[in-house]
Amino acid sequence: MSDEPVSGWDPSIAVLADVDFSRFKVRYGGIDQWALTAFYNFRREDVDLAKFDPEQPSEAIKTNLHETVHVYQLLATSYGHYTQLLRDFQSNQVLRIIQSLLARGVGLRAPVVHQALTELKKKRSDELGLDLYLWYLAEMVMIFLEHDHELYAQQMLSGLPVKYPSLAEQFALLNHYLHQYCRNTGRSTLSPPGPNI
Image 1: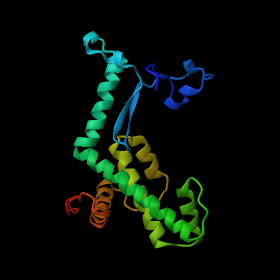
Image 2: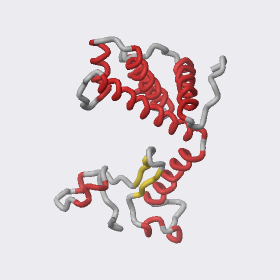
Image 3: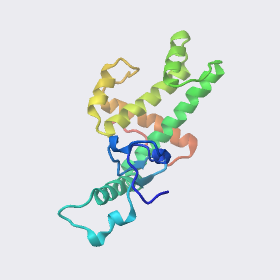
């Protein structure tokens, strides 16, 4: 890996000598929620604290702090544990949907959700419907937790399979299934949902 910062969304395109990177916005870093790591797109000397000016911190220093805090948030808070559990739960639901589609003899192609919806229209399946619904419910809660309220409202009004429109009911139902998932898989368990959720 080069010590030079790479411009563009995908650092792997830096190997392409013919790419004009001047048209891309520089991305200084980010986090990988699946790997629980941060990545930084600048040289080590760009974050030399000996040259740090608190009045005008460089983009590299601001990014270093920002992305590192995100990783700590994922690793060390109940919010991070909950979001990682939701992602794990969603992955499990996708595997169950794929298994169900394969059992029906459906050849897989992306996006799998469209294939699942098409299959549900052809032949009702409570198991496939529940798996799809639970994946979607987890997605809605994640969208809300990420503060994308515009997308959340758009999804709520789109007519997709949301049977429990109140946010409190969505959390209560999802936590019920998360508790079952944790118990059945040996994951760190959440408390069973109480009547006041």
